[in-house]
Image (tube, rainbow, N blue to C red):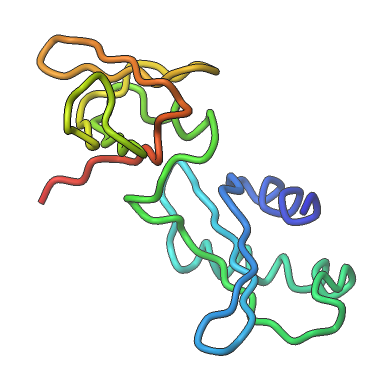
Length: 146
């Protein structure tokens, strides 16, 4: 929804994703935002308050009741946009495949994100670059070490 992106961007945040789904029996419009400095509860409240009037005027659910949730996407959310990849160049990521490739049984690769193009994602592991075709990738997300 362009109105959501306009409001979020005007406040200095990046719109990451918008979902409309049923949670615990209620409809929720979930707006995920990001910021270079991180996202606090105050940030979520600011965005939520700024979205109230424009969304009421837009009536995106045709007068059906819903809960508006504004949230950070979380540390381990899958990358969805080229911007997500660019923001994480040089960081450790995990790449999950739909099926093993090149005769191996491996469906999970962990390495440093080098590049993402229209055709492939390249990661570096132990000094070796591995390019994996985008069509074979189920998801790429930050690798979280505990």
